[in-house]
Length: 260
Image (tube, rainbow, N blue to C red; front, side, top):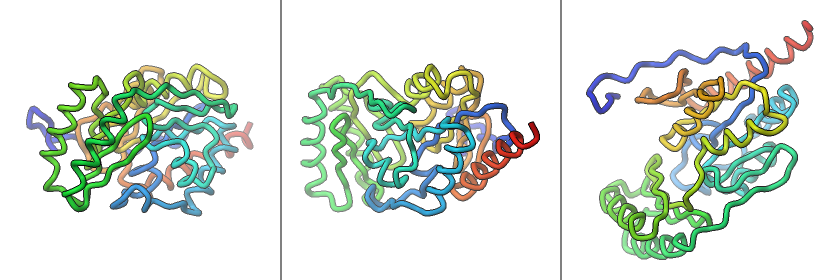
């Protein structure tokens, strides 16, 4: 992949396993779960659930899923294994103690949902996702619709004041005021994350805010997938590599406790 200047994006080395008091912030799609043709096609997975439970115990709760999905979708896919989680790009958040924080929905989201449905009506394969706090327009199964979808999303963003969030074959118009970096920073100001080393794993442009927040707070980002320009410091190839690394981190924390 090349940057806007034309230089090849460097291949990133794998992140270290031994980290003093890590706090993990994990994107869902493309990181903990493989990308799928439709949002509902992503299902719970026994290995993923087991890894999350093991991390939760080893890191004393310093694990959070930080996703563009809603909290209910995060719980469905993770099989309830994530106690702390942030949904809809930081617009809703469940703290480590289980308490909830949710921003009020911008009224422009309803208009975006309606116009997205009108757009999808005569374009087979285009999917509209209503998250209440945001509207998503998926065109993974209709790539020819990409340019028109982008034009529509940009127009609506300008007319409604909603924040435009591009993703992997999806465009979202969301209530302004939060992103994954805001979510990471909020978690890091609270127990059990406070004072730990934040590590954000993500694959998409939506995760760059999370990478930057982790770096600013003394940690780092991990880009999952092919190399591209990023503020992440390390990289992992795919979901399988992520799960392998997470298991190794949990094992190293347990081994350190035994040595102590």
